[in-house]
Image 1 (tube, one colour):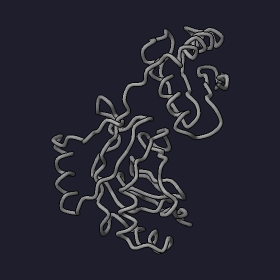
Image 2 (tube, rainbow, N blue to C red):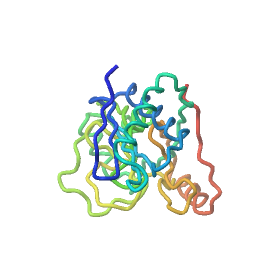
Image 3 (cartoon, one colour):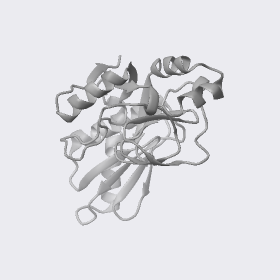
Image 4 (cartoon, rainbow, N blue to C red):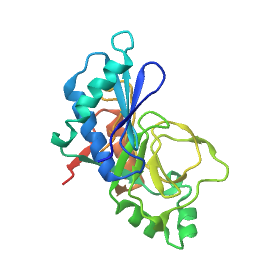
Length: 241
């Protein structure tokens, strides 16, 4: 096992590194470490942020010194092999791949020598692991997209991409959590709200979740959108075996 590495980030954060490559194994170790942090309730730690290969732990330097925090984190790391991960969950995300919701779907199809129906079938056939959240609050960086539908980013990014837009950039797929500029190829849109600061859990996703896309029609999109706005829609989840 590669020994963990601790490094300071400013005067109030520690980066705990788990390796150099993006993999499910490292993601599981990161999930396990985050679970240990949650249970430990170490005094002085404010929050932590998982990424592809590390966890950044934020602490109050008025309560703990860097050396004290790293000593406690190292102790936690030593318990990692004994930690039983809670089952991961799969979030079912309804997506409309039609009309104005999918301005780049035909370009993705043409780039890969496929029909638009084939692109949608391949995209919805995948199981996507969320390695980290970033770019904007709640934006999922996912692995698992097959290269058959990989497509370069737009040469000129759009000045406005609506929240919920589902896009492809190279060999990645993602979902815009907020209205922002962006250069991903947009192939659909979900009516789900990925980030809402007024919710108890503002982000729909957590690092370590899986995502599965489900095709819906334009009419279904409007129905679900209205249910979401009324607080009546129940997001579908599955347990990942």
